[in-house]
Image 1 (tube, rainbow over the protein chains, first blue to last red):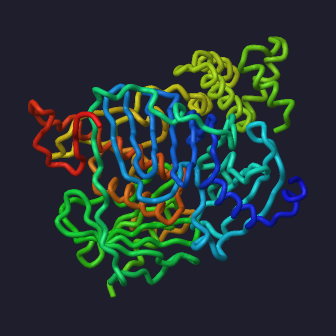
Image 2: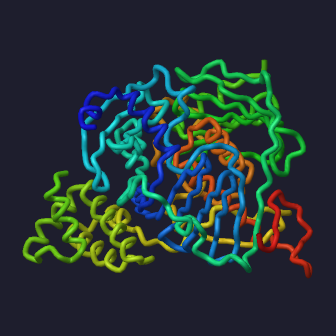
Length: 301
Length: 206
C-alpha cells in the first residue's frame, strides 16, 4: 500500500476518495473549526446494499441528532421535543467533499500530492487543490492511505488562510456498524414531527437567462423552474459550476421584498441585483467577488 | 508543528505539563496561532471523550493566555463554549408550526450576515477589493435569501458537490425555519392538527 500511496497520481486519489465516501463504514469523532470556533460531532455511517445509514450527534448545546436512513433524514431536536423530517433525493453523504467525476474540475485548479502525515492515528496523504485565480477557494484534503477516505479537509482562501476545517479526532473505518449505533438515542414518542415536502422542479431545456461574463471555467450545468414557498410564480434556478465550485443563480420577478445585496452563510456568499424588472441573485461557496460578477453579468436573451 | 510541541500542548491542556515549563509554552501559544488552534482542538477532543457538554478548563486556559498577552482577539479564538446562539432571523408571517432549537450551538458559526452595499463611487470591485472583515451582522428578515441558500445547497448535493459545510448549513437553515415558526405558532386543535399555511407539515409522532 505504501508503494501505491507514493506512486498514485492526484486524480487517482480523488477517484479513490469518491469511491470511499460512498462505500466506507465508519464511526468516530469529527472536529469542525471555523471562525476560530471549535465544535465536535459524533458520527456513525454505514452502507448496506447501497442504502446509506448515518447518525450525527452534536456534542455542544442542545444535543441535536441527525438520523439518516436512505433518503429520509430526521433532525431530532431534544430540547424542543421536535423532529424535522426531510427527503434528500440524492446519494450524497455527509462527508463527501467533491463533485461527481462527470463534472469534476477542468483547467481552473492544480491538484498535487503534497506529503504524508498522520491524522487521527492513521497514515494519510495530503492533496492540495489550488485555484488559478481568486474566484474560487482552494482545498486541502488528507486521505487515508489504506482506504482513500477523507480524514481531514480544509477550505482555503486566496490569502492562504483556512476558512473552514473538518477533521476526525478519532475514527474506526470499515468495521461493522451495529444498528443500535445508528438508531436515535432519544425516545421521540411524544415529540412533534414536521415534514418538509419534496421539491417541485420543472426541468428547463434552455433558460432565457444567461451570463455574458462568467469567471473563467464556469459553465451552466442545470436549469430549472422551481416553485418556492410563498411564491405564486416559479423561480428560474440555473446552476453554474467550474467542476468544483458551484454557483446558483435565481431569477424571479422583482417585488417589494428587496433581498440584501450581499450576504454570506459560512463560506457561502450571495449577491443580488435587479435587472430589467427581475431580481437576480447568485449564491455559492465561492468568494464574494464571484457571485457578484456572475449575478451582474446575467441578461435575458 | 512537530509532534513534540503537540505533545506539550496536549499535556498542558490536560494539566499535566510541569508548571515551571508552562510559562515557556504559554509564551509560545501567545505567538503561534496554529498552536493555539491545536490547543483548542485538544480541549474539544477531551471534552468529547469525557462526554462533557461544557468546557471546564477552557476559561482557565483562556485567562492564563490572555493574562500573558492581554489579547482580545485570542480570547475569542478560545471561545468554544458558546451555548446561546444569536437570532438574526425574525418570525415568518403566516408560518404556523411549532418548535425548536439552537443548532448554532453545534456550529458556532454566524448566521446569514449581510454586507454593506458597495460605494458606487468606488468603481468596479476586484476580488481583492472585497474584504471579509467588512461584513456585518444586521438583523433583518430575509426568508427569500435563506430559501435560495437552501435550494443551492440541495442542487449542489444532487450534482455530488456536497461538502459537509453545505449540508450542515442546510440543516442549520432548516432549523431556522422551525425557529421562525415558533413565535408565529397557531392554536393546535384536539387532534394535534392546526390551520397550516406553511410549507412544512406538522404532525404528532411518526
